[in-house]
Image (cartoon, protein in one colour):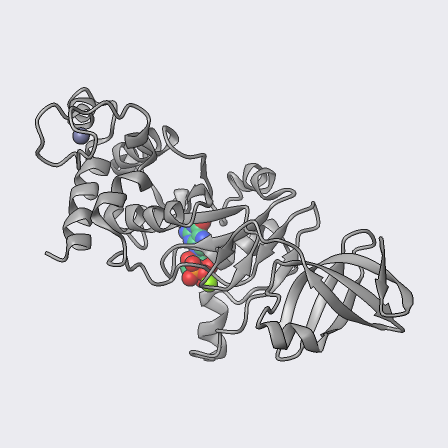
Length: 301
Ligand SMILES: Nc1nc2c(ncn2[C@@H]2O[C@H](COP(=O)(O)OP(=O)(O)O)[C@@H](O)[C@H]2O)c(=O)[nH]1
Ligand SMILES: [Mg+2]
Ligand SMILES: [Zn+2]
């Protein structure tokens, strides 16, 4: 609690995190008590054009049952879609079957997360659907990505990997990302039972159709941690990326960057160490090929 001098009166300032925003009313969760308080903004926020967003840590003062937001603390980072501040990790969900998501799509998503300087947690979901014939795909997926990111294999049907997944959500602010149908809502239901997020099955039954997009809201997990209730990065567009910067978003290409040319694009230059590492199998061929594919896209070919 911070004592602040507002005009003539000394008032009590509390700290909290914005968990929901509805036109002019914010719901702030108090950092100490966990209590959720309806808050209004002071007029000067509007004048400055500085508006708190979901995930912001704010100072607020309490006036009876409601609160007034006095200031927004400096943001660690800011996600644009959905608009959320102070995100600790983007949980990228992928499936080999139903749907079979192309690795190119996953690698593009990962490029966008890297560009936003956010941490990645990779989830291979629906492992219950994989049989012997998928073993190689699963193995090579795990081999490729555990070199770069934490990977958790899960099934919301058998419960496999769910406890491990919970561990990754503890005491962090997480947001899900990945194409439709991979099980993002189901996973959130699995780590936070009772939340009853609308999964595809239920929404099909209710025939609600497009009624699902609302402003982001933060959900408090019973074991600690916060999660955004709507998926992030639904559009996977990379064309705003400068070609020369693309290599920065492939973590495995940063480590041993000793190419002959400092500005090596790792495409066709002589003395390219990255190509050497691909040949040695130290960098996954699929990742390198997708780098080349995405490169073509960002130069507009
Ligand atoms: N077999 C299997 N199906 C799953 C699993 N997780 C989710 N599903 C199903 O996949 C479909 C899409 O799930 P949903 O959570 O709506 O995906 P979202 O679009 O990413 O939020 C639903 O029919 C789920 O029941 C899983 O681990 N195994
Ligand atoms: Mg969903
Ligand atoms: Zn190179």
